[in-house]
Length: 301
Image 1 (cartoon, one colour):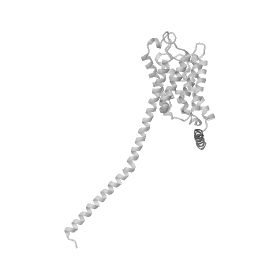
Image 2: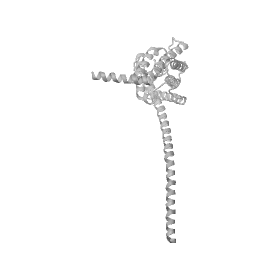
Image 3: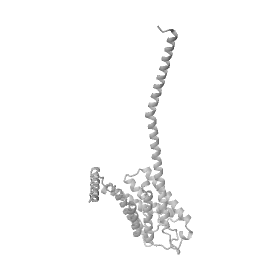
């Protein structure tokens, strides 16, 4: 039989081993639980932070793009005894500026540049209501900043002249038009613009996005050439709001809100329910495969 000292030694070793085993088990259980929970919690927090950062980046990009639109677009409208200009030059300039803005920020925020376009994306179920409101704020702030920069860098005789007594780039009705005629023109040209947007967003055009900046640039140039001398061809409340608030010129300003926003709402609803069609994924894959096969055969030949 073991002596008392040997029994005490064995008992002590058993107690020590038991405590170490319990501690190890406890540590293992805790670390296992944490391994399942902490990474998940960290992952959730990371995703939340990433999503928030992406949203902030999107809104900031929209603000910068709208500021760029106002600064470059309105600079191309300067006309006085020193700087010559025409409706053709202004229209083409705005088209090119829209092209640049979409090329720079289209991949970040879509480069709406226009509350009417944002309204159409909301109706088209492309963005949520909170994001649409954030876009609206970004566009108004961006337009305000862009026109403010224009006034800061240009001499006063470039902003106010005999050709632009109320301020350069201010949208106003031709003196031969009534308010309702101006409203109808802004409504209809905005309908055309939003039809182009809805066509680009149509799922059937999902694989045909490479030339989007060029398409929108030419569309804006065309519409500006058509209606520029009649109403200023705004189609954009933010574009009309910034010059109006900086110069305090509010004559018929309501037209440039009601016309574009109503045109956007009507056109996007009609296009969404009457013309939009979802694409069959199998058919799309088959078409993509056939297209690749045709290209390969052409290269082989």
